[in-house]
Image (cartoon, rainbow, N blue to C red; front, side, top):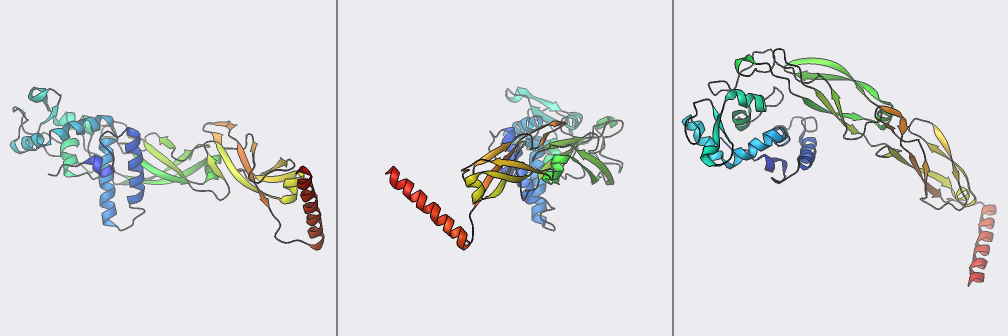
Length: 342
């Protein structure tokens, strides 16, 4: 059985922080997701390996056990073949966990403890033999518990087990994030398909997680179902750029308005426009703040960010004879002013 180097799978160092692991997983998952690579078996296999690595390294307890296992892999392998524990004594079907301190630091870990610590592999997460053997549910004979066709396998003795949480990405437009939206999702878990209406609150940002209680994988027996987590991805907007709760927009103004002052129409994310007072001699790319025209805070619609309008001064592309004369007159005035200053 091949030892799985989950750190190498995600391309991170063994000292990587939880944040580093999370970022590496998201980047790789997006690249190799089956929806992005339809029919690509290599991408599908890679995606499963990435999921498996994140399942372990993304959980502090599992990661700790995995790090301990890695250092003692040969002992575990030998114990599996001999049906005993490193140091002797463990009955077949029980595995050992290194509690530290050399041979005397090992104790037998029962299949029930393995099930409680790590849970079984769900129908949508087919893990490798390595994961199943050392992190998955096993019965008293050392085999993985088989499902009955009525949900995930139970732990030893039929003990109810909470369903696993699941995560999906959800694309939204900036307008949907501003107003909030209800989406009907088609979910398929444990061989059962269903639809669920999910309300996304106004103000969510790119990368936000929305929790939908009880819509994950089903639990066993009387145990509760897991939760559904929706990871929000905002599509790029043709007009606005988002920065936290603030929005940014570029607004074109004529050269005469920039020089003499005036007003400009600024679009807002709610489909309206607001009048911006442009002072005299406004410079190109000068930015103005429009307070309270940005994105709302989640669950606090009365609190909104700001809108920052940056002006693009538009030069004329053609001049009439009269305009040409006026610009020549302005040029003479500007030239005379510079000579006087000299």
